[in-house]
Image (cartoon, rainbow, N blue to C red; front, side, top):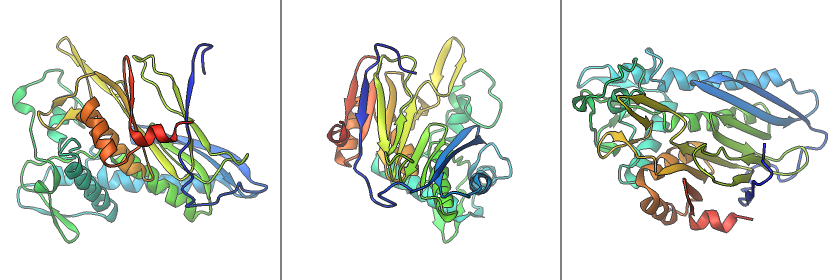
Length: 329
């Protein structure tokens, strides 16, 4: 809810026209929600009269279960967990979804100069963000540095090779991928107008019942005086990376879950949040992490080089990429 003194910054990306350009005549709106990947998912959709919402819920749950089975570090039987625990030189078959996410992660790792790194599993565990219980003590010797990009993973047909001691962590990209897969599953069920969110990562298709895009108010950092940002989404995704979402406190300190691959340590808290728009939620998810690691100056320069609509909020100021500014109403 907005307070009396809150101002609203409205962003209206151009309609991608990948789906219907008019609202569904006689459509019926519904909402569903549930839990997955340690967070909550929420669906709002407009469907033809007579559509059973439970169909959409079942389709989404099936998609989410598949992503967890392949890429969850909290599932000891997932393909990712088995790979992380495997001996050096072993080859591992991976599913098509795992391969797609890993390929995207490697691409963004290369493009960002390693600011996004899917091989920080051991460092994440050392700082209390892994699947194992956190001891509350940080030991420098446990903070493992692994090289980003395709230098650390060998892809052989449908298999990946474990070089020894490599620990993948796809938590910075898998939620966005699950949103993309969920949207495609909804389309297969005949749903062309929907907004799907998993833990703050969102993607919309089509239009609301009133013919407007899906209006989304971005989550604000509790430590920032930032204004409300409202985005009209249609065939676009938006992801947010913020230092307040997941934190650990121990030994008199507090730190966020976002790690700097250059030193295996948490980034500082100078940036409160980064928002990125992209047609793919998987890409938006990983790019938001890369920008928060790069920092204010390099992060916006990276966004401008790649024409990414991106927004960085600190405790005292907001920095926008050229593409973001262009779409602000």
